Length: 87
Image (cartoon, rainbow, N blue to C red; front, side, top):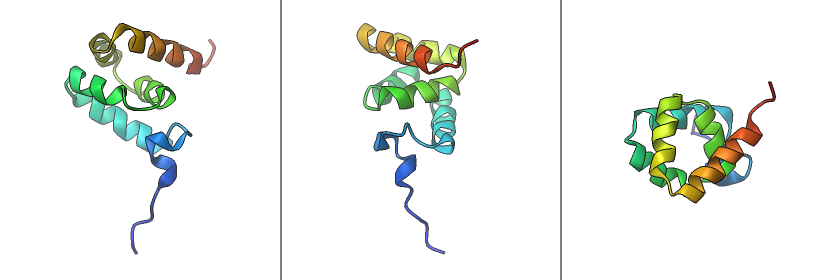
């Protein structure tokens, strides 16, 4: 069978990407140089990046946030906090 296109899994689709795509991205970013991951994160929707960060090692997320411009890091941190379930 031919592979089927997966438009819903694309990070720019507005839905934030499907769960499998988010998980795959998190695994890749966990292994990447934080500066390289930061460059990619700046080009993706904040909601998608927040979902990816939620699946990642917190130390790696901190490294990536530290590699971002302060405004971008603050925006992503706020997006991530707003997306987190209330405790």
